[in-house]
Image (cartoon, rainbow, N blue to C red; front, top):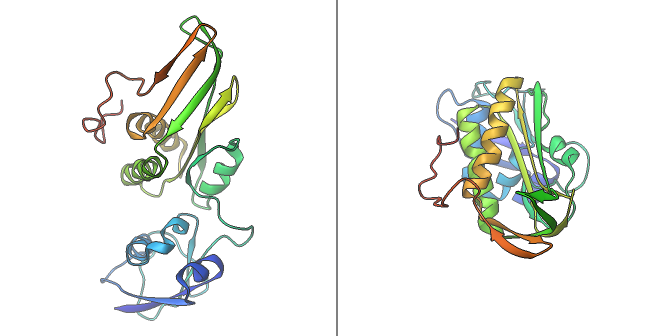
Length: 235
């Protein structure tokens, strides 16, 4: 069936139209619909994670099956300015509350946040500061890959990751990961998976600046070979 989807605010601006049309297979649900929108309208994809679908003027759950005569609208957040990206490499200070807002949604009963900070001592050596560097576009794409892996293992999970680069002093925040799930056990498991996979496959390096020298560091779990670090190997 062919259905029309109404767009508003930032979505309409990005698509440069107020409505789009999709041909949907039988028994398509809301989750499938969002995936199809992202595939066929890539410009909208970065915003879809924070959007809701309205069917016949009511907010729809991800499992709601779409009927031929439904009126469908894709709704961005109702307040605020440009949506903060869920996956980012930045030189600006990080704040966990921003990522909590990005993943918070009516279906989540738990939101886990991981905040990685610069510690002063590592194996007896005193750190003066850390300097982070990233292959930024690839790092963002790999963050998205980790999120996709999480959403496959824990359906309906919402994920956000921000990592800071540049010089960071002791106690400053280097990375924030937020995971929202329906139940707390899932959030603990998915959150651990997120940070371990980020360390495994996202191309970010740090230079540890000590009182008596410095050294570049990468993967912290043994020899780094991202081609062998496939999904499902996180303990």
